[in-house]
Amino acid sequence: MCLGIPGLVVKIDDHAKKLATVDVSGVRRQINIACIVDDNHSIDDCVGDWVLVHVGFAMSRINEAEAAHTLQILTELGEAQAEIEAMRQTSIH
Amino acid sequence: MKYSDEFRDREKAQVLIREIDQLAAGIMAGRDLPIQIMEVCGGHTHSIFRYGLEGMLPESIELVHGPGCPVCVLPMGRVDDCVAIAEREGVIFTTFGDAMRVPGSKKSLLQAKAAGADVRMVYSPMDALTLARKNPDNDVVFFGLGFETTMPSTALTILQAEAEGLRNFSVFCNHITIVPTIKAILDSPDLHLDGFLGPGHVSMVIGTAPYEFIARFYKRPMVVAGFEPLDVLQSIWMVLQQIKDGRAEIENQYARIVPDAGNAAALAAVTRVYELREFFEWRGLGSIDHSGVRLRESYAAFDAERKFDIPNLKIADPKSCQCGEVLKGVIKPWQCKVFGTACTPEMPMGALMVSTEGACSAYYQYGGVKRQKSMVPA
Image 1: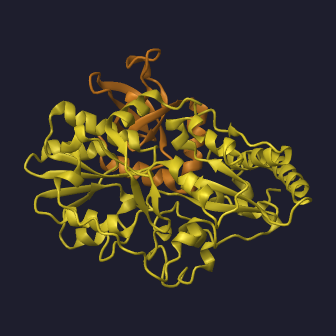
Image 2: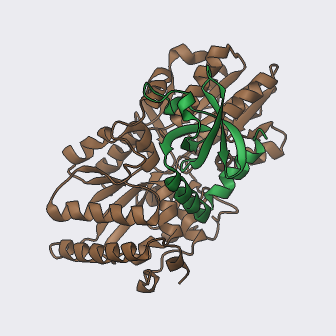
């Protein structure tokens, strides 16, 4: 819940609600991207972003290397498995 | 040693530990008491135990595991309130999985579910919103919980519910805020902390400015830290460097995730939806002024506390349970009378045993701290 998990934004689902599909280690689910959109980074710019996802909300943009590294740490902490399982149960694919 | 293989950059870790040793020795030359550094965040606690970091540090450094696990600080009375709402006819009560096993005075949410209440685990508050859309005849209640890391997600979900005109969605708001909590810790006469590791993901939302009072008025250093073992070690090194130099500043070791100004969109949603409570009750710590938030009057329609009649009783923690003293760093988990006997991760009595981010569960799971130099990556 607090550590979040890295994912890749693959497409925008709903511009008005700022919803996008994110891929987290092969599990796809819908997340909210309101917190990573600003004047310099439009909704469409988010496609291809690596993001840190907390309880279904992208809270920070990160780079790909950081994402891989973070996922590794979360796996070692046992947090990644729990998070991905929780996502899988509510996944959209 | 198992731990050493898991360091991606052993050399860096070795250099850091050597420098930490030297810094600590220098600081200890002028004092008797150990150097106490509190990690405020439960994520750090988990990482410290998982990688055996305490065992790599010199004896003179004592890590105090702070109250930064929102599940762990949830008082029994609030769990009872959750159960009371969940047991109402027509209510679908939704919660993060972490909160299911926290003991109430009579039962946990998991036990309420087993007894027939409609309690459902969700990954996100948005999942609760989806349930509300699909079940227009039920009242869907989301158990909002966490520090500033998860506060914006609940706020944005409420704003979405408002935009859609959903009338059967509400939040039982138990979000807590970090700054008054740290202030209460600093004001506690039991504690003599020398510095802090600042929470990473809370700071990603609020930035670093809200911590300035710690340096300015309490003259204590804080380093906002990442969660990897090297992040934690580097942050401890930065705290020690400040102590050695006689500085008290707020530094940001986790700048790759934490912008000094925080996240503007998240903060805007938080400010719009919540207001500070006069006080909020914490497990083990008692009541802390302004440490919780509730929904503003304008969002009353989405406030489960206003919508339903809740018992809102203050329930004392079990007498034998010493979570409060552990939370404040006055005793170590294994010094608690019920640690590992009446209180285990399978049958938790205190909240610190429930979550993997709780100090007691971490001690139990990773076999406690072995202060052996052999654990230093070689």
